[in-house]
Amino acid sequence: MTEHLPSSIGILPLGIHVSLRQLANMYLLFTLNEALVLRVTTDQRVWRILLLNLAVADIGHLISVAPLGAGIYYDFTRWNTMDWGNIPFVYLGLTSRFCFLMGYGVKSKRE
Image 1 (cartoon, rainbow, N blue to C red):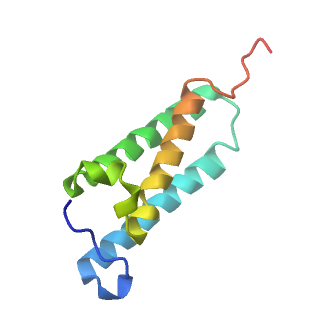
Image 2 (image 1 turned 90 degrees about the vertical axis):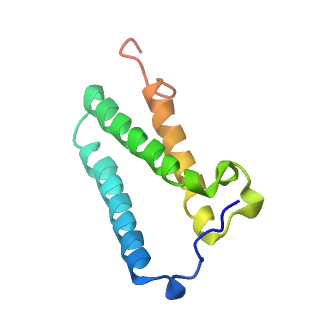
Protein backbone atom coordinates (compact mmCIF):
# COMPACT_ATOMS: atom_id res chain seq x y z
CA MET A 1 0.00 0.00 0.00
CA THR A 2 1.21 3.48 -0.79
CA GLU A 3 2.35 5.47 2.25
CA HIS A 4 -0.27 7.72 3.76
CA LEU A 5 -0.04 11.36 4.67
CA PRO A 6 1.37 11.98 8.13
CA SER A 7 -1.28 12.21 10.83
CA SER A 8 0.24 15.24 12.54
CA ILE A 9 -0.72 18.51 10.89
CA GLY A 10 2.41 20.24 12.16
CA ILE A 11 4.65 18.39 9.70
CA LEU A 12 2.48 18.77 6.62
CA PRO A 13 3.60 20.96 3.74
CA LEU A 14 1.71 24.26 3.55
CA GLY A 15 -0.14 23.27 0.35
CA ILE A 16 -1.51 20.12 1.95
CA HIS A 17 -2.43 22.05 5.09
CA VAL A 18 -4.44 24.52 2.96
CA SER A 19 -6.09 21.66 1.05
CA LEU A 20 -7.17 20.02 4.31
CA ARG A 21 -8.68 23.28 5.51
CA GLN A 22 -10.57 23.59 2.22
CA LEU A 23 -11.83 20.02 2.64
CA ALA A 24 -12.99 20.87 6.16
CA ASN A 25 -14.83 23.87 4.75
CA MET A 26 -16.60 21.59 2.25
CA TYR A 27 -17.71 19.37 5.12
CA LEU A 28 -19.07 22.48 6.82
CA LEU A 29 -21.04 23.26 3.65
CA PHE A 30 -22.45 19.71 3.63
CA THR A 31 -23.46 20.10 7.27
CA LEU A 32 -25.11 23.47 6.75
CA ASN A 33 -26.97 22.22 3.67
CA GLU A 34 -28.36 19.27 5.55
CA ALA A 35 -29.03 21.11 8.80
CA LEU A 36 -30.58 24.25 7.36
CA VAL A 37 -32.00 23.51 3.90
CA LEU A 38 -33.65 20.26 4.93
CA ARG A 39 -35.20 21.86 8.01
CA VAL A 40 -37.10 24.46 6.00
CA THR A 41 -38.88 22.08 3.65
CA THR A 42 -40.93 18.91 3.86
CA ASP A 43 -40.85 18.47 0.09
CA GLN A 44 -39.22 15.09 -0.42
CA ARG A 45 -38.16 16.07 -3.94
CA VAL A 46 -35.88 18.71 -2.39
CA TRP A 47 -34.60 16.20 0.15
CA ARG A 48 -33.93 13.59 -2.52
CA ILE A 49 -32.06 15.87 -4.92
CA LEU A 50 -29.92 17.38 -2.15
CA LEU A 51 -29.07 14.00 -0.66
CA LEU A 52 -28.39 12.54 -4.11
CA ASN A 53 -25.94 15.37 -4.79
CA LEU A 54 -24.23 14.78 -1.45
CA ALA A 55 -24.05 11.03 -2.19
CA VAL A 56 -22.33 11.79 -5.50
CA ALA A 57 -19.86 13.99 -3.60
CA ASP A 58 -19.28 11.15 -1.09
CA ILE A 59 -18.50 8.76 -3.93
CA GLY A 60 -16.12 11.32 -5.41
CA HIS A 61 -14.44 11.64 -2.02
CA LEU A 62 -13.94 7.88 -1.84
CA ILE A 63 -12.58 7.80 -5.40
CA SER A 64 -10.08 10.51 -4.46
CA VAL A 65 -8.24 8.12 -2.11
CA ALA A 66 -7.95 5.35 -4.73
CA PRO A 67 -4.24 6.10 -5.36
CA LEU A 68 -3.60 4.77 -1.83
CA GLY A 69 -4.62 1.29 -3.06
CA ALA A 70 -7.71 -0.86 -2.68
CA GLY A 71 -6.88 -1.61 0.95
CA ILE A 72 -7.72 1.96 1.93
CA TYR A 73 -11.40 1.06 1.60
CA TYR A 74 -11.46 -1.98 3.86
CA ASP A 75 -8.15 -2.65 5.68
CA PHE A 76 -8.84 -0.63 8.81
CA THR A 77 -5.86 -2.24 10.57
CA ARG A 78 -3.58 -0.10 8.38
CA TRP A 79 -5.52 3.15 8.73
CA ASN A 80 -3.79 6.09 10.35
CA THR A 81 -5.50 8.86 12.29
CA MET A 82 -6.40 10.78 9.15
CA ASP A 83 -7.94 7.68 7.57
CA TRP A 84 -10.00 7.00 10.71
CA GLY A 85 -11.30 10.57 10.61
CA ASN A 86 -12.05 10.26 6.92
CA ILE A 87 -13.15 6.92 5.47
CA PRO A 88 -15.66 5.69 8.12
CA PHE A 89 -17.47 9.03 8.22
CA VAL A 90 -17.86 9.07 4.44
CA TYR A 91 -19.18 5.48 4.58
CA LEU A 92 -21.63 6.48 7.31
CA GLY A 93 -22.88 9.55 5.43
CA LEU A 94 -23.15 7.67 2.14
CA THR A 95 -25.00 4.79 3.78
CA SER A 96 -27.50 7.11 5.47
CA ARG A 97 -28.09 8.99 2.21
CA PHE A 98 -28.64 5.75 0.26
CA CYS A 99 -31.03 4.50 2.95
CA PHE A 100 -33.11 7.65 2.65
CA LEU A 101 -33.02 7.58 -1.15
CA MET A 102 -34.18 3.93 -1.12
CA GLY A 103 -37.00 4.79 1.28
CA TYR A 104 -35.75 3.08 4.45
CA GLY A 105 -37.25 4.84 7.45
CA VAL A 106 -39.27 7.21 5.27
CA LYS A 107 -43.01 7.24 5.84
CA SER A 108 -44.99 6.79 2.67
CA LYS A 109 -47.80 9.21 1.91
CA ARG A 110 -50.29 6.39 2.54
CA GLU A 111 -49.31 6.08 6.21
